[in-house]
Structures are given as structure tokens and as C-alpha cells.
Image (cartoon, rainbow, N blue to C red; front, side, top):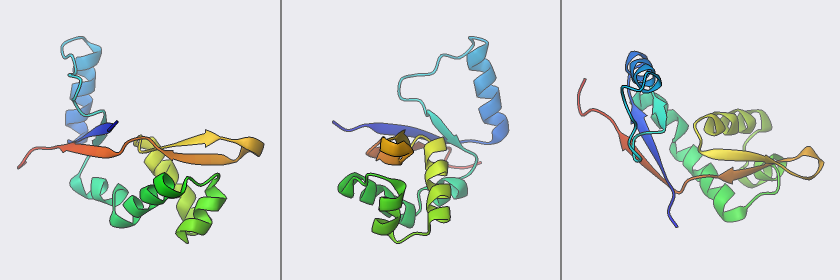
Length: 121
């Protein structure tokens, strides 16, 4: 089954206004409305760079049992890898599950991403 993360690009002010309207009950989000927001296409592109998408693919295909194992599989330095995974976790792209001995096991949570953004400012 395909699981899609709906992502939006909007200014901080627009996101804040939308969140407040939802909190006040003035706006009811639709099922396929973005769940994750970025403030720019550049920030979205950084998180989902080719290198980071390759990392997600390694996680899905190789199913590492720990971040240390993923470090070996990906060839990325531990500090860089940990920072990248925390960022991806913040955006809902990965989950870090506590395993045996407190090891963190990375899992990819979505297999598709749908982007919604205005065509112009």
C-alpha cells in the first residue's frame, strides 16, 4: 500500500495564520491537505536532496538495525547522519524506534511525497 506525505510550501506568516484559523475552528483541514510545511522550496530541496533520498532508499531496502549500521551502509559520518535523521524525523520522513540496548532503528514512514505550493508569489 502506498503511503503519501502531503507537503506544502508557504511563508511563516501564512502557516501561522492557517494554524490559528484551524485552532479557532474557522478552517477544517481536508484529508489530503499538507501535513508538513516548509517555508521555501530551497528548504524542501535540502531535506529531500538526492543524497538524502538515497539515504531513505538504503533504509527501506537494507533495513539497518541501528544508526551505526546505517552509517556503515551509507558511508556517512555519524554526526552528519544523526543530524540528517533528526531533521527527517522532524518532518515526518523517518521514525527512530528504540531497539535493543537503546539502539535507534531508522524506518521510512512514507513512500511518496505530494508537494503543494503556489505557482508564483
